[in-house]
Amino acid sequence: MTRQPPLTVSDPIGYAFAVAGAVLFSTKGIFIKLAYGQGVSTEMLLSLRMLVALPVYLLILVTILRREDSLRRALSVPVVLASMAVGILGYYLSSYLDFLGLNFVTAQYERLVLFTYPFFVLLFGVWFFGDRMLWRVVPAMLVSYAGLLVIFGWNLAINPDGLVTGTLLVLAAAITFALYQHLAKRQMLTIGAGLFTCIGMSTAALVAIGQNLVLAGPASYLGLTPQIWAYGLALGLLGTVLPSFLMNMGMARIGARATASTGAFGPVVTIIIAVLVLGEPFTLFHAIGTALVLAGSVLFTRAERAARKATP
Image (cartoon, rainbow, N blue to C red; front, side, top):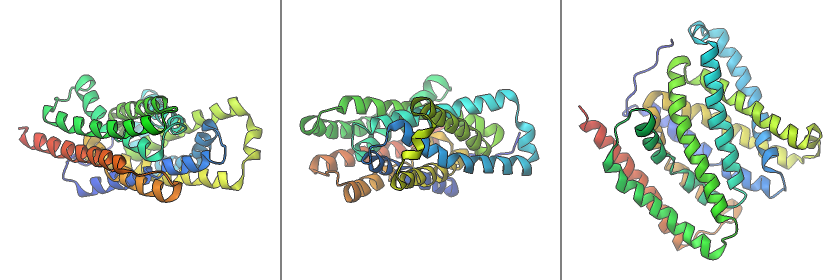
């Protein structure tokens, strides 16, 4: 078993990794929306993202296995299969639900809904992984959900078509990603963040590419424009490869809860780019809702840290 650095919520490097990953992940919705404007299907776009990312992960995987004897010895059939399953959950299923949801909602609203996943990380930790319930974070959760309700209400009044469907799809993506965070942490303790990321993402990539090949066939890639390929390249590198490694390295150092609490930068970056690039509206209701969501996140982080310090 490879030796891991001690977990600590005061680890600045771990937080830096997690924040950088959250910021880069926030560009994903923008590229997806731009690609949808070119008429590309959800399955094709997800496969393009993975087609670009897959060679990178395979190259890194081979490099790690060549250089790290201890990691290679830690691999076993159960460990590999578990890593593959967790990768499919977090990098295929969660991503597919999110991509589907973006057919119906704006990029900034999608990011805010996804931003609720730290709450599910907490709940899953209590329900399934033996964590202690931190009741002092409940008011923070309610504040964030109040913000989502404000924006949901505005969208329901202005453009209700597909809003409920899109919200439920993105919420399902947040739930599956929260479960992934707990399961991924356990795999990383065995084989390390880098090796797990390569195995999990490579498996998810093969599933996504295989799905599109079955639905559209190999010839479907030949009809894509250079612009669509460019969006796929951006999704694969900026929205997938770099943030996945940064997020997992952060998680390995500071844990799933602390990593989840650093995502406040994501919605802010998404909103700015969505307004400037996509021309999405940003009204007083959006400002109030966003402020509530972010305030809830800040309160959540402070309450969780205070609870951890108070724990003997």
